Length: 111
Image (cartoon, rainbow, N blue to C red; front, side):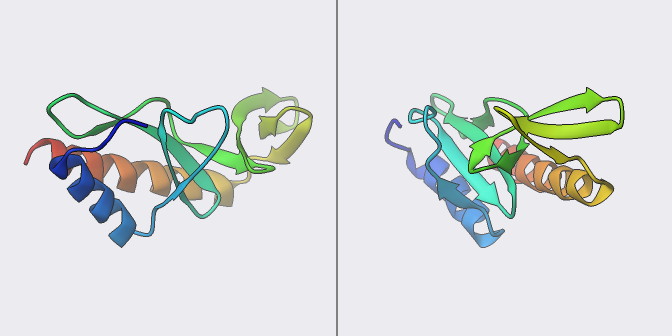
């Protein structure tokens, strides 16, 4: 992970204040992984600016980033052979996570 600028550190401080916490998820050593609850996102610094999402936020399954897939019985979050149901509660938690994260990142970009 590259060293963060003062502006990027202010964004990280805002994320901390909102309950987000950094985590290490191999093989994403070059990204800033942020978690809140059972959701996580990969962030990367932007040269001379703030932070940006590398991929859409997702749910954590067995300590790893999952992929959301459609199955006959509905949607699931999958990591390797482990699946958990994408319940309305989990989908709402993920949407709330995404919304608050992007709001903080967008606010930091305009300052």
